[in-house]
Image (cartoon, rainbow, N blue to C red; front, side):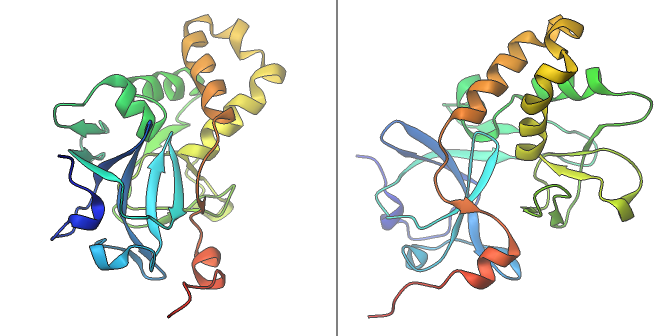
Length: 214
């Protein structure tokens, strides 16, 4: 019998959840001060930060989500690899959470690089996406476009993917970079896939009302 989130007796940070056909990750409880451990008591009371197709969203979880047992691992200072540990660590499961495999993201960024940028970024603390103002949690994959932090140089994984898709016609990337055709097709499918929840921003956490207390 599958273990549901409502039956947990201890927090499960960075775990993989399943609900019907949907597979996504639970990163923790979102608070104005950052991420915290998500407990059973937080169901329907607190915002859960979830990751799906490379997008970070705030959601209210119902408790009937199945805890698969797989765990996430994120980039480190010396190794930008990321993915999932456990029996179900297939490429499609990794894409279901992150959107792109580490090798696909590395290939994309490396091909676009002119000079020193863009590069894959790493941070132990939360950052703010320069394009969307969304929060990028510490260790979460992102891109850096220059060394001029003052002018905004940090791009979230979701924003980076959306910019790439929007630039495909004008940049003629499909013709210029034929080796990236499979990655471009995957990006276009990701962008049109519906997302649940609302964007992860500090303004959202401050302005959206909490649940009604009964």
